Amino acid sequence: MIWEITAEELLARYADGERDFRGIELIQSAEEPQDNMIDLRGAILRDINLRGAYLRQADLTEADLTGADLFGVSLESAWLKRAIVRDANLYSANLHWCSLHEADLRGTNLAQMNACGAFFCGANIGGFEFAILIKTNFRNARIAPNIIWSYGNFVYDTTMPDGTIKKGPIFGEF
Image (cartoon, rainbow, N blue to C red; front, side, top):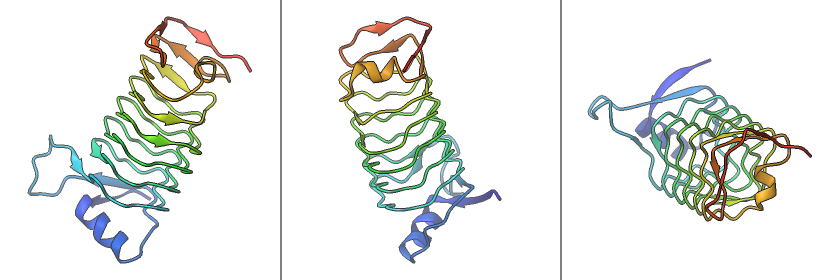
């Protein structure tokens, strides 16, 4: 089931104790220009269920998504700069053009993510497998480089933590 909800409605319902927002499409409120980012900066959304949600252009800068279920979520062109996304589930997430600069992703399941054009600069990442990493940027990320180009990941023109670029295509082996 897909249903539309504004950031203001989401925050109000979350504050009232609701946690299940599976399949929502986050939309801009009528007062805001449709080209703007959807403002959820600094929101505390711990243990929220956003499975399959469409959060395109959501600004989740410095948000706390600890323990969130984001399985299959679309965060295309979203900002999660300095966000806390610990022990969360981002399995099969669409992170195309997503900014995760300095995000804390420790303990988060990032397997099978589409991270084409995503920015993980300075992020703290535990690991992942079977990910699509095309023009993905890991500069200064805290992750072992072999995790990026191993474990079934597809790597092409991806910036490594030390700033070097893996041209590829590389199909990571275990």
